[in-house]
Amino acid sequence: MQYRYATEADAPDMAELFAANHHDALTERQRAEQGFVQGRFDVGALRAMAGARELLVADDGGRVAGLLALSEPTTLADPSPPVAGLLLAQEALEWQGRPLAEARWLLYGPVVVAAAYRGRGVARALFTMAVAAASERAEAVVGDCKNVRCNSRSWKMHRCRVAEGNLTPRLSQNRA
Image (cartoon, rainbow, N blue to C red; front, side):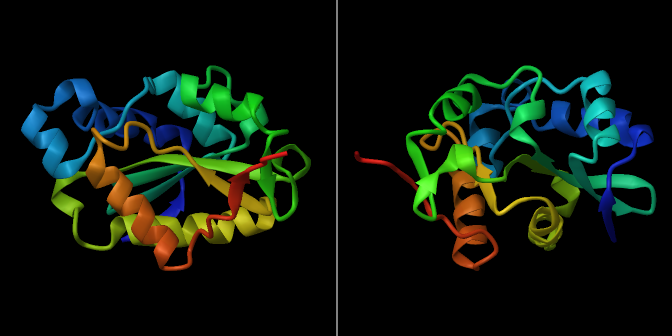
């Protein structure tokens, strides 16, 4: 398995991976058992993100086995409502004693791994690569995990990466 930045040529495979794991493509049972992704990522959007070096992929001999987005918040063309709310709240959120708006930070997620590759360390390796990539570009990485109640598998995976020390949750709401 090779872990690398996505290329524009990966966009069709990435779009297929998103579509196969999208909330609307799965049954309620599948969503509960494996988690799901939300948002719309078409081939054009994924090509643009790959061109901006905002996508990391797990490549198994030319097949995209998984991916993780790592984006500059200022470059998001159409942020989801939770991300838009986060962007608006930057002054009220603290990172290491100062407003998040004053820090260089990246947004990670979504993360998706093909069914055939789950449980094989793909997400863990993508997170490891993301931490290394982020350390060159930012001082904080902020995750976007939507629908915690509905997507408990996703939440568990994100919490495990934090607990392992790969991503340190020091972001807190300023009470002042």
